[in-house]
Image (tube, rainbow, N blue to C red; front, side, top):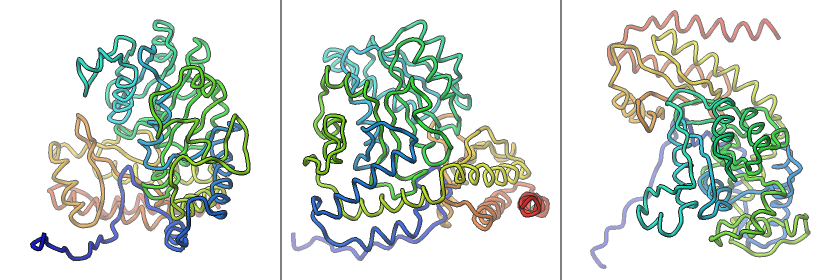
Length: 415
């Protein structure tokens, strides 16, 4: 052991995080994280912070669901809690139109597979009870697609991503909820990319009984704090009847630590996991900021600044195929097709963090999570244009700049 190398301290420079997530955490959230004292996870202020956080989260999500709280970890942690209600043999329909809804589908197949089905193909089980409805990359899941599949299969559960970040497409939440309600399915929604970005209240979608999001995107609270989840009474009652084969990600046991016991808020919860005082403080502040800004105003700002970015990259000869407001997914100008990975790696090497899509066809993704100001969008546009030009694209940067100027001056005139 005497020859073990002791590395120097890790220095990670600040970058322009212009991808689909993690998003740019607000400095006030980082300050609360760093300023939190070393505290026991059952210390009174930590517990008070959790109580206040779950109340704020209900307001942000637009719900009266008592079982609304945060799951320690990333968005995948929240999704795993939500999908834990799916049992072997359960009939499920999952709608897939990108990378992340595809992983949701794999999660469901693993949970719904019988012991024999799982053993037959442990990493990619194909349970007979699960139907995967594949929608081509770049297209949205429509209400008509959902209606047709649920009418045919009559599942116990139906699952869909609200915003599919892999392809940048918004799926039809109203159509999904209505079809679930009509056919008696319990809807499960991956709201990882939409919560805190789109203005919606989950109680307006009664066909959906489970919701899972993440801390790092619309809530803008570091990747490793708390993933918001919310469950209806019907979901919880179903879980009580069937049980689930997990302890750590058990929706009811998780809720107890947040002071949610037997469908009621109580003063003191019961121990389930060791929570971090730092994470609680950061999450609490992120929720405060969201409520101060309001979800409606934040959604309006995302739409406004995304339109500026969309117009700018279009003026560079790119074709935008997405319809999300926190992210543009685009095809490069014809002469640069096939060089997406090269472009992304070059940008990252210079502290400009854009992303490729993670499945075919390869496209470029540029995000504006918590970059809702003219200066940030202008920097993204200028740096992206410079890299395209360096690769040989014929870009009239003055035309691009003029377009940005018109977009932002129009807003000033309107005010």
